[in-house]
Image 1 (cartoon, rainbow, N blue to C red):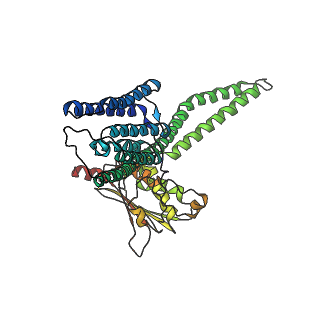
Image 2: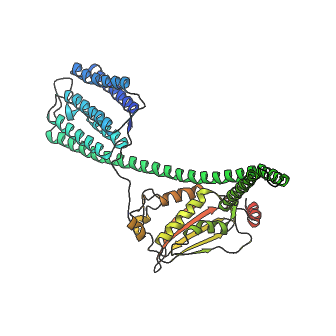
Image 3: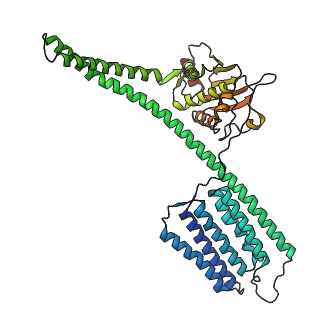
Length: 444
């Protein structure tokens, strides 16, 4: 199948909870105070302790103000969270300037704000924070107070070594930031796609519930409506010619008949959409295929005529998943789509194949992932509706929930086209036939 990768717009911001940011900063403040106390009092290294504690105290003051002024459950966007993380970079820069610059091993803490941004904020904000962190690291590499040390023999690190530290830190900021952002983005894509799947399934279940409600209402209203019609009929019989209420009674009779027609229509619609809770396999496949037969593509359903054919529990997820795969096959097929089904004691296999171009190498390894789409139909391109690439993902997810295992491949040359195979274990779809029941108990 011809390929067109459509990915969701990158650079999205999903926000950062203020409470999370405050807690992380309190953790940083506690760690900084502990490090200053251990180095100054424990190791006896001379420190500009007043200046360092003032810098740390400023972060504590900012945290208190944020906690007092804003609700902790507030979610911050890039415009608010970005500057707060930039402040953390600058605060760390001030501490490193007072305690040795790039010679200080805590210089690796420049990675923390970038990592936080990459998991919750947009790509643009993450890049700007990374550039700021690298620039600040270079600044404290050029200008900083001496590294605190006890004794007269202060360690002297070559400038080339310090430059290497700055380069390695810059590479770490770029690589780790990009990797963390990519992993977080994939998690967000998967969460959004799963949410879309849940909405589709909920919609199908809601429609099924409405069908049942309509049938129940028609059944419950049928009895009182019949009583009303009977009373109206008796009233008409008892009336004499010229009775002033004759027209009103006739109108009442007409409206009662109209109500009866509406209830019969509701009953027929409900019965037409979901006649049974369980359906023979051939009937279920015909229900799936029927909406796609009028697009100029021949659809051939092959199900052997067997009195012991599987009877499958009908559910919206199964119908929608199969329907989505059939629709995709019709979109890409040149002339025909073949659907075949086979069953045994082991389970049920359904194959959907088309004679289109097949899966391209770029797509074949990513089929079933969210936001990967291949749309080839000219009518889709003309309308500008290439889709978000959720169709296969939703279909695959819904079918796997029914117990199916899906495999995607192309036909063997010289034939062309895509082949989708689905396998359900015998118990997954609540398959019921006399033959299955007998053999199944013997195999258990």
